[in-house]
Length: 351
Ligand code: SF4
Ligand code: SF4
Image 1 (spheres, helix red, strand yellow):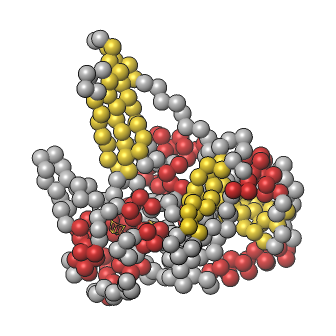
Image 2: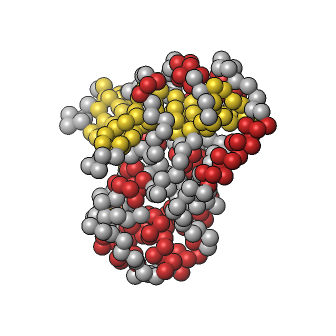
Image 3: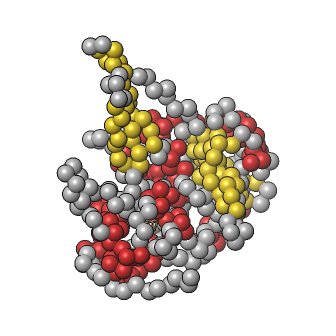
C-alpha cells in the first residue's frame, strides 16, 4: 500500500475532479425525534453537501451496487417473434466517504456475487466501474465492527482518507487513485506523520464499547440450535424485514415475472428480500418451510454467523450495528449472540 498526505483544502479539489461522474456521498437526511441528525447516502452535486463526519447512515451504500428493485430483462412480442429490450448501462458512480465497515461488506458480497459458478453480472459491472473513496470514522455505541474484523480496510476501495490535523493521510489502493491524486498537492508522509497515523488508529481502537465474542461461535451455534432463546427472540420479532433492508451484507432476493395482459411483453423483476418475512420460505403449493418468526430469525443468524463462515471462513456481518439501531423490537446482534452463549435473554428494553 502507498501512503501519502495532502492538505485538507485539496479535498474540495478532489471532489471537483471526481465530479465528471455522478457522486454519491453521506448527507443529512432527517432529524430524529430526540434531535439527533440522521444521515444517508444520496447523490451529491455540491461539495458543501457532503457530511464526512457522519456517525452512521440509515441505509448502507450497498443499494448503489445491488438495487432494492431492478428489471433484469424484458421482452416484447411482435407477431411470431420476440425481441429483448435493451437496458441502458448504469453510469459509473463515485462513492465518496464510505466507512470501513461498508467497504468490507462489499468485499463479502464480492465473494458471492462475483464468483463462479453464478456471478451476478450486473453487480460485477457496477462494482468494477465504481470509484470508492473511503473515509475514517469514530465508533458509536452500536458499532462492533472491530469484533467482526471489519474496522479497517485492506482492499475493496480506491483510496482511504483519514483526517490528520489540517491534512489528510491517504492510503492508496489502486493505480487509478494514484494517478488522480497527482492532481493534488500530495507528498510522502514524514516519519512523525506515520507515527501520528498509528497513534490515531490505536486511539480509535480504544473507543469501541460494544464487543461480540466470535471465537467458537459456529460451534456454539451448532450446540444451541434448539436453544429456548430463539423462541424468545422470535416472539419479539415483528417479521418486518427492516434489518435486511438496512444491512450492507444481506443479498437474498426474489424474482417476479410480469406478463402484459395482452401478452405483448414480459419482464423479470428482481427485488431484495428478507429471510424474516413471512413468505420467504414459502414454495409452490403453499408450503412454508419457516412459518414461525423464531425459525426465520434463527435462519438469518445461522446464515450470517454459521453457514457463511463455513463457506468463506468469515461471517456475513461487518458489525455496522444498523439492524439493531433500526429494529423496532430492539433486537441487536450483540444481544442475540450473548444470549445464545448464556442460554437466556437478558431483557434490556426500557420502554
Ligand atoms: S429483527 Fe427487528 S428489524 Fe428484523 S424483522 Fe425482526 S423486528 Fe424487524
Ligand atoms: S447483520 Fe446488522 S450489524 Fe451485521 S452487517 Fe448486517 S446490519 Fe450490520
